[in-house]
Structure formats: structure tokens, C-alpha cells
Length: 380
Ligand SMILES: *[C@@H]1O[C@H](CO)[C@@H](O)[C@H](O)[C@H]1NC(C)=O
Ligand SMILES: *[C@@H]1O[C@H](CO)[C@@H](O)[C@H](O)[C@H]1NC(C)=O
Ligand SMILES: *[C@@H]1O[C@H](CO)[C@@H](O)[C@H](O)[C@H]1NC(C)=O
Ligand SMILES: *[C@@H]1O[C@H](CO)[C@@H](O)[C@H](O)[C@H]1NC(C)=O
Ligand SMILES: [Cu+2]
Image (cartoon, rainbow, N blue to C red; front, side, top):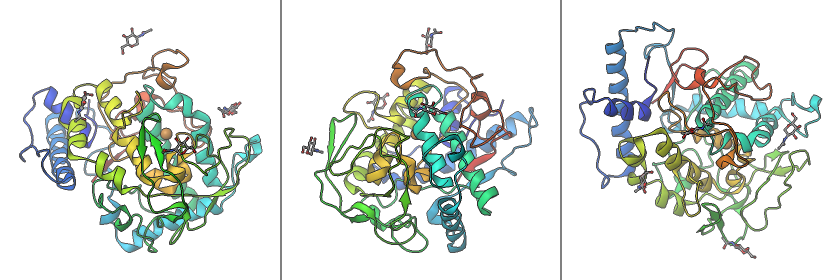
């Protein structure tokens, strides 16, 4: 058995008291960007160590030498970034494959949003949350590559860089090599996060993406559960609602929630001790007044990105999953917060993405991002 990736690897190895990597554990006093960089070195060393120890006993097709690398947007060159942006634009311009089944989708891009909306209640605060989203991202990456000629892999947005001013992040600086800028200014009284218990002040946006790629871009589905004033909600996936992608980059939320404390907690700290605590701390939103790293990612985007159902409307959604991995354990049921009550998720559950990908994949097939089939990647 091969251990999972990055952050998951560290917690697994420390449970089993295998020799820890050579760099000293980072401290909560440090800048969270530095903490992340240290953790990434530790993770890579741990993966290498695990690979040596296991001597490829399962001799799968995937190894560190062959794994695809998902890169920090900041470390990608201009050509790669433009290639990614063009492929996403191509999805916006391509025909939906779901309209034939009566879905209100206007583009291939909408298909992904619609599938997420359709399945929201069975893939969030559930035992399959990480696995399902990992597979969903894989489907999106596959569409970019096979339908839109993208030659790279999924990039990621490093949450911990540019926390003080998210608009300065190369992901959001509005240049031709970004995912577009902040929204146009739209006055509103802030956003309620953490199950409506954490008021966040509004940022400087709130309207349509103002500049750069995806400026004024139209989408067809959602929002379903708007959490700020002046952002009308349709509540029904099958009610078409053409609207522009809205954003309100929130540096307040980034500074408060993308902290060294929160990062260390889910990697080396108390929340890394079990899959239950890890999921709860990472996802957030399980109980009122709590906002985990994953949920915080949505609220730093603001606008469309804050909608539990239709957040994939913002292309930056697909770069949120910085720590998608953990061990081969799962915990939780198959309905959101077990409401209505449902069975525990099992590793034999089939992952449903409504035909975005056609292969039959089980939850157990995506627990290891280096499992070989269908996944073989690391984040670096
Ligand atoms: C999800 O899609 C199916 C059709 O595939 C539909 O019957 C169902 O009502 C949808 N559910 C939601 C919550 O959109
Ligand atoms: C904004 O005002 C509305 C009432 O107009 C209120 O329901 C909502 O909770 C307020 N939002 C925040 C974040 O304070
Ligand atoms: C760390 O995670 C534990 C376990 O979920 C939680 O009780 C604690 O509040 C978290 N601490 C911080 C600083 O987030
Ligand atoms: C579901 O899993 C929990 C532990 O996560 C366990 O306590 C419970 O008994 C399980 N329920 C069923 C019906 O197997
Ligand atoms: Cu989701």
C-alpha cells in the first residue's frame, strides 16, 4: 500500500512513527507561506521515503518519477498560464452535453457547475467529500485536455501567499495571465459565513469580474444559496439564470482564516490525528461559527464562489483544492451533515459525476492520488 500525498503523508507517517523528514517542523509564529513551503519539502521527502521503503511492492504504474505535477499558479510560466486560461475559455464556448437530458446548461463549462449543484447534498460534509471532489477535478482536467487541447495539468492557487491583498495575487491581478480580477464595485453589506454565524465585511468588488480573462463572462446556472444582499438566488437548478460571474475578493477573510495555526492544525496538529477531525477542520461549516480552510477559500473569492451549490461558476473554484489528500480511511455518511440520515459511505461506493466521465470509478480508486488508475499526481 502506498501512502497518499503531501499533507496526508505527513500525518500518516507520524502516526506510524516512521522516521520524520529532515527539516524541523515549522512554528505557528512563522509566516503561513513559509510554513506551507516547509510542509511541502517535508511531504516530498516523506513520499520519497515511503517509496523507498515499500520498494514498489504494489508496482503500480504510478511513481514520483511518473506522477503529474499540479503546480502553484505563481510558479507557472506565461505560456502555461495562457494555455490554461484558453482551455477554460474553450469550455465556456463549447456546447453543453447535458442539454440533451433537459438540463438548463448553456455551455460545457455549465455542465460542471450543474453536476456539482445537482449532487451538492450528497458530496459535502459527507464521507465522500474529498474523494468525490478529487474525481470531479479529474473530470474537469480531462475535459480541458481532451476537449480543449490543454497540455498541462491542474494548477493551484496558493492560499497563503498575498493574504494581505488578494488582488495582488498573480491568480487575481487581472492581467492576461491571471484568472481575471476582482469584481466591479457593487455595494453590499458583507457576507455571512460559517453557517450564517460569521459576518465578513464586503471587499472592493461584488459585481462582474472587471478585468482580464473571464471579465463579464456569462454563466447559466445558480446561484442557489446566495449569502449576500443584492445577489438574487434562483434556488432551482432547472431554472435558467444567465448572469455574469461575480467576485468580491476578501483579504480580511484570507488574513483571518489562512493562518499558520489553521494550516499546522490539519497537517501536523490535533486535526491531523484522524480522518474525522481532519475533514471537519478542513471543510468547515459543520457547526455554526466555524469556518475551515476549505470553506474560507470560498469566502475569499466572494460572489459566485460563496454559493455552496454553484460555486464552480467561478473558474478559480477549480484551483481551491490545495490539500485534497489524506489516508485510505473515510468517515461520514452520504448526505450533508447526515441530514436526512443515511448510510455510512463505503470505499465500494460508486462515484457519480453524471456522465462527465464515463468510466466506472469507486471511492476506493481515488483515495490515493498516486493509485495509478485513474489518478497519478502530486502537488508541488
Ligand atoms: C438531479 O438531476 C436529476 C436528473 O439526473 C433530477 O431528477 C434531480 O431532481 C436533480 N436534483 C437536484 C437537486 O437538482
Ligand atoms: C445585510 O442586511 C440584511 C438585511 O437587509 C441582513 O438580513 C443580512 O444579515 C445583512 N448581512 C450582513 C453580513 O450583515
Ligand atoms: C485544531 O483542531 C482541533 C480538532 O479538530 C480543534 O478542536 C481545534 O479547535 C483546532 N485548533 C485551531 C487553532 O484551529
Ligand atoms: C458508521 O460509522 C461510525 C463511525 O464513523 C460508526 O460509529 C457507526 O456504527 C457506523 N454506522 C453503521 C450503520 O455502520
Ligand atoms: Cu463542492
